[in-house]
Image (cartoon, rainbow, N blue to C red):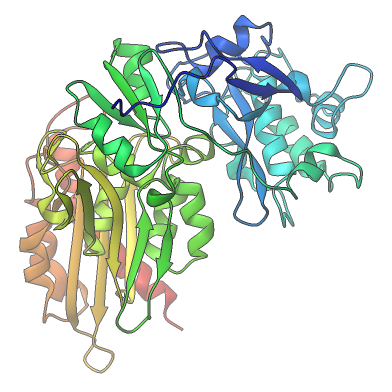
Length: 471
């Protein structure tokens, strides 16, 4: 018996309120390719790697604060086939020349449209924020993934700040109050959406099969490097990978489903893990965080990913699931080499487990050429417990990225911290040990010398920050 869902000749996507047949959309065609092929040319290809936002569109997804939420994503990255059964709104569907959408109106009257190339993407990102349930003020991070080629950001920000609440009869606002679109099993040549985790695992056991969720990494590989996996297995909508539970604060576990996006986790955790809260704003852009999943970011095994250092400092474990069942591995033992791990063919990351209680003092330091929407040169995550009576370090965990072939724990520096006073003099040996950790390389982002210098400054920087916060 075949493990693949049947082809559904009638598979369609609702675009700007109208059903569109999706029969011929198969890899390597992206959602952007397909939308432009049917005449919706407002979304454009600027970078093909999810960094400029010219391709942004809205999709209706299961919400955190409402049944459905309009979510802005990069159409240049996701496979067109993944739109099956979904609802999409492009800039053309928001308003008309005779009846502009509030976002379009503010962009026009405040001079935000400028040359117009990037405007449709900005409009879609702004519209997602416009419809965000419970919005009290405009979150500027909603625009962090949109690049204005005319460099005129002030009028764009003015337009965003001028937005009020959606009108009572706004149909897109009303859509958020009902259930999100359901996804059904579906396949086209080279792409499959399985109906269950078991079905996904059976497909992934095939040679050449690759799991895909937000496609924020695989999409770049396909667009810029010509990657063409034999079979893409969509795991982003599998219920088994989308749970989130928080245990008892004193002796429990936080479990995060590997299929949840960073934006979903950020909002569902509601600040319960401060170290992750420090990571989220610096992890690429909101457009990417709306697609990128915890499992995908860890599964790529990149040595410069932002999540692994933080999760290493949190003593996280990964629950892997495969044909032989589930097994749990410490994240510190998960990576075995450059983009390699202990996962065997057919295995998926199912859940991320973070033990409680959390360390009281945490920090995430990302060194990059740009403050936001950039790749780390060095990433340092620190989690400490300090003795309130003696002000010495009782427990220390430090995760690093960008200084070795894999994300690593700075075990020598951790050992040098435990038992010493949390002072400049007390942490000096640990700071030296941290500077000597890993095998930094010279590349276009930073020199090895610079990376070592940043490592050496991480603990003194955290000490200074903690002293500033003292009453």
